[in-house]
Length: 452
Image (cartoon, rainbow, N blue to C red; front, side, top):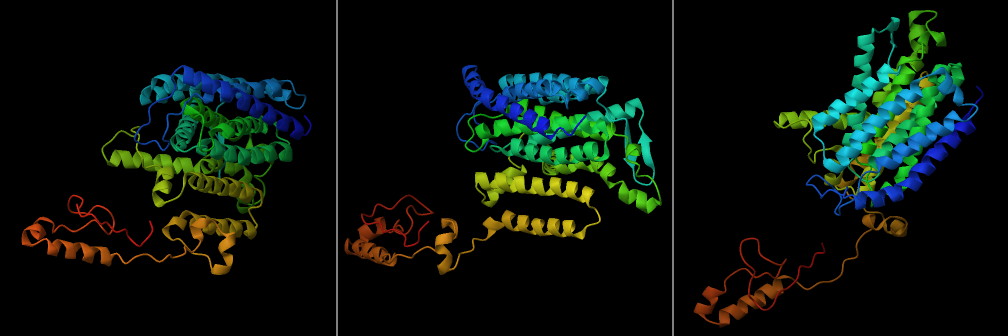
């Protein structure tokens, strides 16, 4: 096969176009069928929003696979490997369960069982981990049961990690798109750089996954017109896991000819092979951390690990003071930094510049993360160049809030002892109602001099 950059780009564009064009009709279908659940306590959106966006994403997946099968440089993936068919089978099953959940709210254990069955279907058709590279030992072959358990575990963890992070408009689709882009660069380098065609299916899966997310994002950005629902979040999680399993378990590390020379040299040269063991986790590092923290938090409080709450990372960003859009962009930033940082390190592990850049960007990310804790004011000469949030407010003269209080007390004193005894409540002149009782019935009410 030749260098199929244009074919991958065409596949990505067709997948994105089909997903984008079908999302509008799917939205109308979701509204007509009543797939618009009521707003729950943990939800961030304020109006009922239709789900079932995964329907458009699934048909985008099918269109991408169909186009790739008819392209000269990509049809060899379908001839030499059964992995695309295995992916389609598992995706169809998990998508169907997700559609039913978006409409009828299935039990969490039922969805967990469906995820394991979908992973088992892919294993039965050859999409499984056959061996893993271990530093210092080389390639370790796995038995059928070991490979199956490891494959199922990776699929279930990835699906639920993506599902857990799907809490803000455009968050899950954007983070998975970033992960797929980083994974595409890595898998394409393994295939074309080392001439290993076994990495071609993973490269194709990553390109199609990018197209699914790119096509859906315009409809899902804040304020979202439709949600992907579990039919979409579980689907893109499974596709991401399938690519990781393919490049990890199917590419023979011995084909890279890296286990040669001294042990130190071999280990150093084996970084491109060891990275697949970490890359799926680093790509979903933020969702995976959210998943682990959620399970620990819920079990610590005596609740089910599947019980929904408002303790996810995106909820905490909102509580800190970030806006909806800024919270999403911060999550994008950290996902891109981790995913592309790991890929860059796997390519040039001996370069200190990569580590310095990663450390510098991490410092920038921490500043952005903690920005609402302090609100710096720009100097006077820069007022017109910064957002209004960081401009110095002009102080306008306001009446002294003490004067209305003194006038009111003087009026009460003139009414006599009986009237004073009746109207000795603290007036609501400073900031509206008092903190200790009902509103004052005094006619004059001053307003606070400070602005809220």
